[in-house]
Figure (cartoon, rainbow, N blue to C red):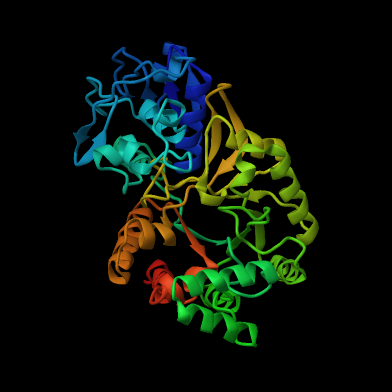
Length: 434
């Protein structure tokens, strides 16, 4: 067991210590304020104070974990043995407040501060501390903790197993548009046909009418995905958009029997979560209606969620999900770039900074999204695969959890997704290669 000495404690400190020692390191720890008890302890110990105490690893604290408000911070990013750090101190063993820096990233502290939102009201990657300082593509918190574990191991105490966890992979699929042409209804089909005629997109209309006459719909990639997942022995989570038709919500009508059958069929084989609509992000009653609908169709408790368009406000979104009874959320990642939005590839409980408390909502941050690679970063297939490989390698190095976000339509080899079908398959090969 690790003993940690601190003359001060707080809810923030308790939260981040539990995340670091239990969730990442998987080891027991105890916090004490009694210096004599700390000095007499003969096993691993960490001194989180300004006072020098012999035979212990010292981390000098800054103010963040002992404050009870959200304040604008002037942060300077430095380097420590090849890794980016901030909240630097005069510490010899570890030259920055590792606990405070980890809390700043995990709590998404910067997203509670004023920011310039994109057209969808989102906090973008290029506004983040990580994006502006070159560590967005690193699971920096896990890397810090990995280094901490090696330092502790060097102290020579028996019984401490440094970094004993294993790499995990969670595939997730968003169904924003279940079918490209089928079951859309007469009005939408005619409207889409007229639109494509106006754009002189003859090929699209040919494909539409071929599908309506009996050919397989391009977005019907469910059997193919099922085969791939079975081959690699992974269990995907499917997130269904079941909102009303609107500018950004374009799935099938909720009264479509085909749509309901698709949800039932997939929920019998895999986990199904809600994909709250764009419109529901500011309308709790709409969110509740979608939740009730999906629960009724799947005949299973809905405990998982991911926001459509990744619309996420830390002052509102998670609080609404908690009210709804959601236990796990998979929204945390950027649309505009890949990487580690919270600086970690370890799932963690949401810390509600507004109310200064840890909640029971588990956050599962994802690292890679198909739309980001293709539409935002505009990468070629080969470039995308290399980006994916780099991220997976970094997650494996810290034995974290890699989570991918894909859409059924991006495996269609249709429209602007033509040529991209092999990317998902190659990603699975990279994950499971020896």
